[in-house]
Image 1: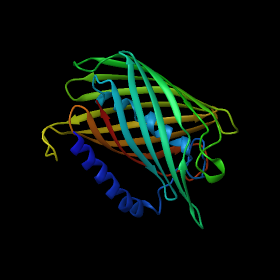
Image 2: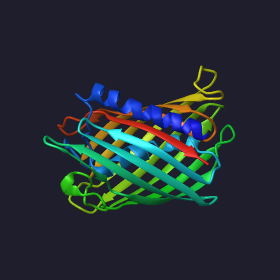
Image 3: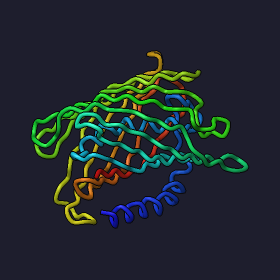
Length: 275
């Protein structure tokens, strides 16, 4: 397992540079909490929570989880270390530690972003056809990043959401979630709704014996104060190394907005491992 993880991290590291150069001309984030500005440290939470339903599909009955996520734009990269631990069979505690790199005209800033801590109540499992899994989640984002250096948002965020996943047949999963994000400063609160599906592809050529692919498609809807509406499409491809480790590539593409703003793609690379 350790050799595989080292190999995956090496591939992620070597891929970041070419991908950033390829997409540098058009990849940046507009949307909830940041409008037409660059991504802030707290806004990687939006992508992470949108991907939660797919993480639940891959989550085995293990006590602890660790991962690595990279969300980037043309001027900023956010490397996040998500941690989780099952303190009880139905109670999971989690934390997220982001490191932000921001490029401006003359120099760059690198430092700690906004930390977040949370907890989830889990019910059910997906081991059998027709099985369902439910999760209620709460999370608090702390203003630990320096706003003047564009490393944080200088605001406390409270995020609550509920997730549901159902297994249809052997390889098809449907997932849905609803959530709300309250922000203490002058940024806008937001409500979200996600509906999507994931299909496991078995029998294809893989890098490691026993590996599988998973293809996901998801609609991500957001409303700010119920007067601004945004609709994005989340595409994901996951490579499941074994029962405990998955490598993820995700792209969140804007589809519709009621605002006149230039919203473009959010790109994400990640790995999740349980033990």
